[in-house]
Amino acid sequence: MPAHPTLQLDPDLARFLAGGVSINAGSASATGVPSLCRAFGCRVDPGTGRITVFFAAPQAADLVRDATRSGALAVVFSEPPTHRTVQIKGQDARLEPLAEGDLACVTAYRAAFAQCLVFLGFTEVMVRTLLDCPDEALVALTFTPSALFNSTPGAQAGTPLIPALMPPPATGAP
Image (cartoon, rainbow, N blue to C red):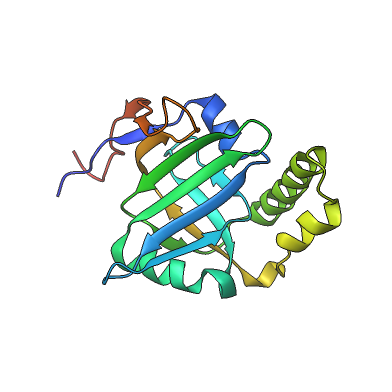
């Protein structure tokens, strides 16, 4: 089966996704029962365009089960002060071990999200409690973006965002 082109996120969008935004992900069971969970940050691979999203395993058990069975994952990134929101969908979600640097990524995300919400009047203790999870309980779901949408409230909500297409990665011999 030939590889499909992947969506290349522009650098500004990749920075937005990895910043202090609210991140929630969803999938569904084979019978259509939704599963969702708050994420603790993400990493965008600039070479492949794949996105890795971090979760607390106990809270994300249903989401991880559903996303890895079907491959379907939708992730919403929303900036609380402005309500700028982007939804990214993928069809090839898989569970992967945390890579070197991922714990630092989660730590940086927690600090950035806390700063974002402190600015809006929430306490840092409340935000850090919301995002509390032992490092050993973190899991990572990785997926290739297959569709991107502007989900910011307003007239343009639901419209597709059209990034550049990347050629499929080379696979072995010519």
